[in-house]
Length: 275
Ligand SMILES: C[S@@+](CC[C@H](N)C(=O)[O-])C[C@H]1O[C@@H](n2cnc3c(N)ncnc32)[C@H](O)[C@@H]1O
Image (cartoon, rainbow, N blue to C red; front, side):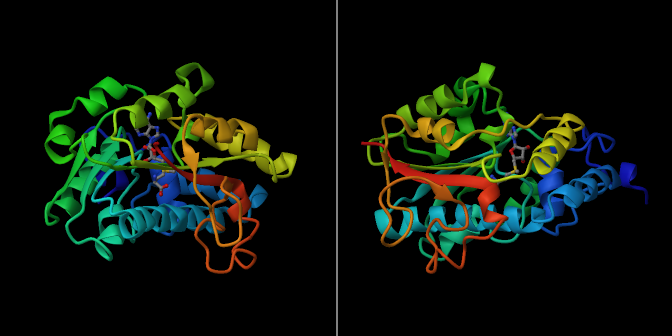
């Protein structure tokens, strides 16, 4: 069977997508030749690609588990959830909270097709196809409303997704809008790609890769990332640190200096509480 035949209905297998590229970086098999080709070209300028993807995925899992274990969060909204992979949010959280509810949201039809197949066996999880740039559609979705009680604290996860949102779509305002709909005591985890520690060749390769994909990428500085937490209380990212943002590998790491790899420095991360 060819890859075109394997593509779920509505999926274009000829243009790379952020979800399938990321799946390939993580070593997954839910990707097509066109994704692998541009990813391998990117890897020649950014050899730490796989390390960066795993550092981000680890942050996502640690942040969700931390919200459940340390703050009793039992309901999660995972915006830009990506293709199912090892340690999906409901699996990571179930290690500490078997009763947690998770709403996955993504706009990529391939993500929805694969997530639905995986989640058919999981209780208290659902997947919604929606564009996070339309918060009214996401927050008003009946399936989200049936699983998330907005009068109780929730965990909002927006990891490795806001760098696909252009300034004109106001990623800062979107974070503020989503968290404002959740109860005080809710937490938000964000990660975001940055050019701050990358050589110009790698930065250009990132822009070139995603200019060929369904979504462009927008690398942002530390100050621009920190602004996404305006009005929120950033937590301490690791033992001995002040509250604030850090590179993805270091957040929640037992040994932050060992986790401070080149790949980790491709993305910033932070977790904050809604007061
Ligand atoms: C790099 S993956 C990140 C997956 C996961 N959040 C993680 O950090 O492991 C980015 C995901 O965001 C999704 N995405 C990008 N822009 C989006 C948008 N405007 N609305 C919903 N999902 C979006 C992509 O389809 C992709 O699945």
